[in-house]
Length: 319
Ligand code: SER
Image 1 (tube, rainbow, N blue to C red):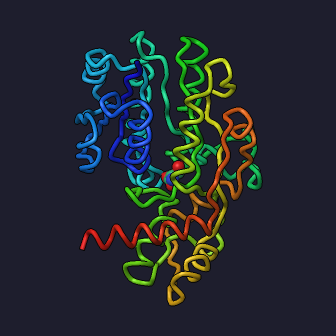
Image 2: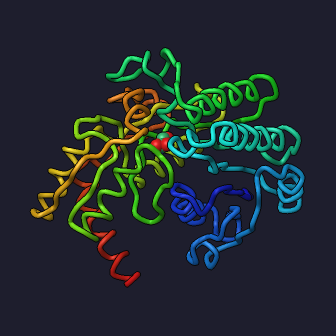
């Protein structure tokens, strides 16, 4: 019987992954946790616990007491916010991961860990088109440095201690349930909310800034697919490249205008432009597709159609 702990359950990925895991493993067996309150649908559909992953004693006690067998550690400071307080972000992103890896090493019941990596592991010297799985990684952001170092720690814990930790290098994730906070790819979510709210969006990245993106249902499926692969078939314990589609603010605008012809955009770039410019345009994810038997289903047009419908419903409910 699996007992799963999700750390960062109130965040952009956690708030959706929880629902899928509860469907698969039973509501009572998936423990949601965060340092902030979670949406009602999370608290009402299964156990929820306030838990600070930085508090290693509380973490290990919780894991032992609840006989946890798998940990999904999703809490992190994203790229934009991390640049504002680099050392704090480094400490949170790294120490929280080390705490989770240590618990997995020490507690025998814990046999699988998931931790998200990111396209931020790449930097200006990485090939920008079809960025390969194994390539030059010289990230220039503190978030990217923490993800790259985190990947090395995951691989180290697997090789040295046999901790079965698995990871995905997510591209920008587009979703409507919980908005991201403080990331460079956040524009690709904000644009839909502002299109519905105001019919206008002021974008913090330039119109032709190309980045890899993915609609959240694809990301959830990719995560579940990776976690289901038998242990001896997981080839990379660093992080698997994955991608849905690549796009720019100008292309997203066109795609929204097909549904809202009056939608307009203006551009006022900020410090995140430099971060975006250091990341890949497109990603080669053939390993994730062949090793994990997964493939993305949503292109930009499908994402736009569903995002506009769902954001409209959500904002109507909030009025
Ligand atoms: N979406 C993240 C960010 O922009 C990248 O992993 O920070």
